[in-house]
Amino acid sequence: MKPIRIMWIVLTGALLAPTAGFAQISCSREGLQRAVDLYIAAQTKGDTSGLPLAAGLGYMENVAPADINNGVIKKAMKIDFHRSLLDTASCQTFTEVLVTDKENPYVLGARLRINHDKIAEIEIIWETTGYWGFNADAYMKYSSTEKWDPISADKRDTRATLVSAAGAYLDAFLEQKKDLVPWGYPCVRTEGGMYTGKGTPQDSCDVGVPSGVNIANRRFVVDETIGSVLVFCTFGAGSPTGGSGAPDSHLFRVENGKLRYVHTLTHLLSANFQGTLPKGSAPGLGAPGGRGTGAPPKNQ
Image: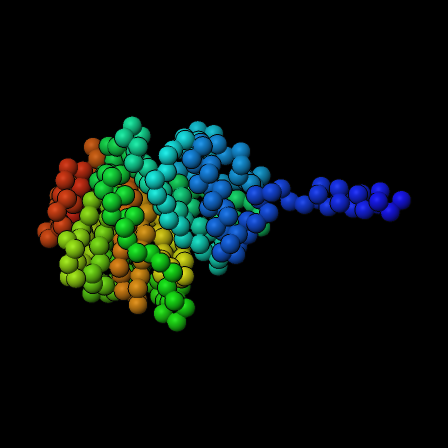
């Protein structure tokens, strides 16, 4: 009887154990990283069957609700590089994904929200050929060589400091109060592939910032461990007087309270852009389809 009883206990335990691969998803850094790993595997294959999706999953692309079955997440991609933020306070992740495939290049920004052991939300913003400033090879060149290492615990900025730095930068687009932004030196900006850096200690992100643009509808993902904050937003308020509100994301690296890196994705067809180059912009930011002074994007 004893061997039979032991076997029954083993079998019962196996049946009750969480499915392998899903069990580690949680709001800890390890659990959030596991969720990211599963997302990367799903995006690589274009197959979401391996994701532990909540029954009431919310799926969005470019700030609008979408059908996951027709989404970009169902498109298989050869991912060349990715980096992630892990936000244990809000149980969210953000992953920057770079695909340099000549036939189908992409830059993606993917946000996940975890609820217990399930993925409750997936939100993706993407750019590809024909979109504002897009150049996957250039984005890969600059982003993959930057240093976004963990910051030692005694030198980390607080969550409030990171959110404040990001907010001040985005606020400057409306009223040009750039003196309130914690500019760091050097600081370089990558926008879809366009780059502001010249490789000098004086490199600044305080170039080509237009005025009159309300960067609205902000949502944050914050990772104090790597000094980073991601903002999902719209470039323009999305009102009759404020432009259509192009889907946008801004990713910041902050060191000692100062901006070090800024990455931007804007889901806006180059053909739909209106505006002129702001005075003092860095080379490349004035290319056809480049962002201009205060001119809102057309409706998508």
